[in-house]
Image (cartoon, rainbow over all chains, first blue to last red):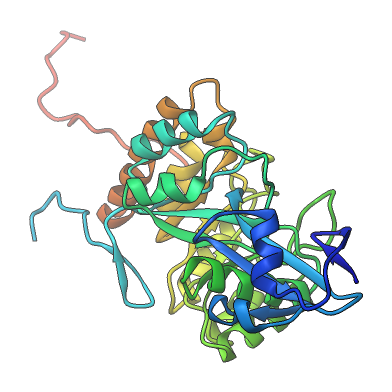
Length: 66
Length: 263
């Protein structure tokens, strides 16, 4: 399936979870949040939340600003 | 109370801060320079932005703040609509474990001025979701009141556009906002140098939020120390009560008892 992660299209195996997607992008244990199709997914739900074809995943963290 | 004491804490939503200088972290040439500046500023609350994870990025501003016991205040910088700002605030709450948010909803990239319609809408939605909302707003006394009525924990009027260093362009409006506010007023944006920060405090603001004036100064840590002194000085002057302005001179030495000149 094809999923958009932080604006970039990626191919993922069917059945991939949010937790699997995050681990591809960062190994940070804290300070990271995920939105799946504009809905926040709480960290505790990452391992059980499936990602589906054409989903949009945003993975954000705090940076210098403001 | 000691006659020279101006040290009362800043209280926002029941949380006390010894420092009345809130810092931003944008614009610093490195994390090391930022760290030195934050320490020199004495700040206890500092903003960060929420952005896509960049795997190549080294060092973490969060770790820096944690190391020094500085509270983190996520912002919604870069948002142009209420919907974007609400989404960003929710992600910040999830990532950082804080309900506090500096709400920024700007109208365009050239002025970065707040969009009052989107701002008020986002404030209402975030307050309803339990956020402690600190909105970056125009220096508009009416909008400031509307934001307070919406349940914001403070109002943060701009002195001048973000990063402009133009100082407090409309001191009268800032005074009006202060006079009518029941929540802390924090002068946010436009500060260029120490006298601007002192003026904001003399006008009655409860705190000052700044970043660029320090992070892009030739010597950031030294400017941070200057800002710290300016905020403290301005606060003390406000509490002390300035003398009224007069059109003509008022002698500070008596005229009686002048030496005779034989004239």
